[in-house]
Image (cartoon, rainbow, N blue to C red; front, side, top):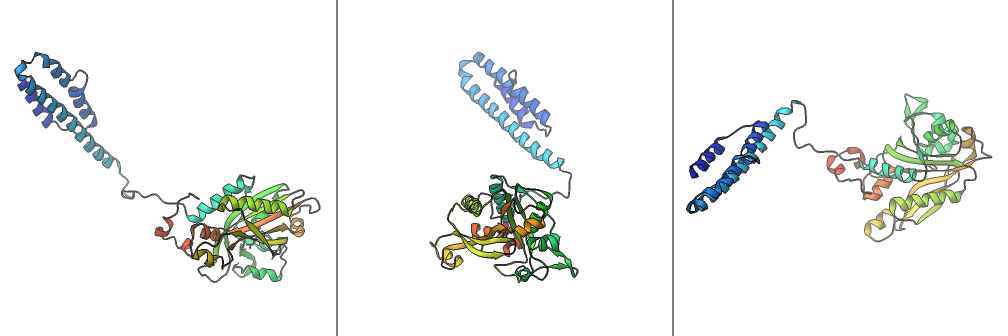
Length: 338
Ligand code: PHE
């Protein structure tokens, strides 16, 4: 009997294959229900009692050897077969690193999510605009001094073709095509001919919002902004300071209370604890008229914010240029958890 077990030892040791089917056949022939191991275990009772101990030991060793052999061969055959399956030589080598969302996209998506929960749709428009949509329709006629508030890039010296300086242009397009009630936000990239520094860039992103219906009041605007800041910053305290925009009357700038706990808080809030995050106001009736909306029947509010500014606050980034350099060491730090 011992001889029989020894013979199987040799057989197991010498077996080799990279064919997964053959390995499985081998496993079944030994470890299957009707396999050799079960046969040998069944024969155990006929072994003379003196030999039982050695026979049992050898049999267990054989069983372990079979298990190890099958495991080894299977793992080898797996790496082998996955290697030969790859025949795309241009494919990136292992390990493949997955990318991250850009922090600007993460913040943009979050803002969109917050406003879509209260019924705002998303509207988009072209980055190359004409004078009407970027300026004139927004109550900024030609030569209006307020045009200087937004230094403009013109294309090919044609004053009618320009890179949009804000996404308010998208709202004009939306109003031209839709009648109230209107509830829409327009996220997008905008351009201004400004000196590049740690706080300003010639390209940045905005989300602007527009709400037009019957009897919309300033209280509705304030309540909407309060809901938004609470959802994004977890902080409900806001204040509105009187301001000026040609397309809204009255206009305001929105500050959130940031706090004065750390030295950074002092620095970024200039010692006041308050931080400006956006501009807003009641849509000027002239703008509604320009878009063929009856300003006696309808009123509305609008607001606009820079995504970079919000991202800088949320992630404590001190230089706006980092968002455009696309250094992966910077980008890899952001996970969409806010
Ligand atoms: N369009 C303004 C800007 O780019 C922001 C704004 C939008 C202000 C809507 C008031 C109302 O600065």
